[in-house]
Length: 99
Length: 135
Image (cartoon, each protein chain N blue to C red):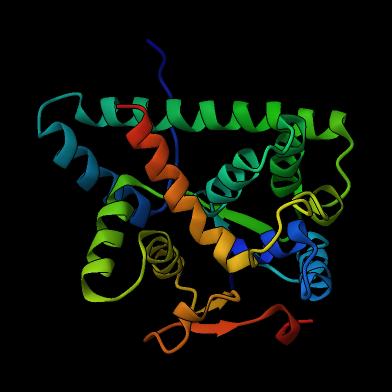
């Protein structure tokens, strides 16, 4: 088991202690359990972020507009708002279709 | 400000008002304007792209472009947000999707939504604007 000594703001410490006690109770080791979860989650997120940064760099993406411009031009007879509201219908149809 | 799905869709459809949406999104992309959207909004756009037979590679590049934008941040919804959104639906005529937008805006303490959807007009604590108002 590793041992890390860290400095955090009083406010963060207070919130963290409260949350850890609520989640894991007042037993010994509650803070370590909560810290393990929090640090693991943050580490995973950061590693995934690095991976995605590399994909973006390799893909040579220029801008949102240049990547999406006219991509749905073939969809006729619907406004952007009407099309947006179709998303929930599509979700529902898929959920029902999966039964 | 929070960007609704129809602003992206207008550019994708290349309809009447796509020019103002492009100019607005370019400003956000360059970091001249700071804005938020949500993972739920992005999911909706992806679902529409997928159901309209857009190639998967195009969906991927859209997601990468959103992620790489200088001025656009993504709010990630929690399951509790969905419960709050259902609560909003009970008290209003909003759909679940629109309610999720209001929940994200409340969490982010944002009052301005950039949208063509008139459902957001006249809602307490929400100011609807259009891209032309911001460029």
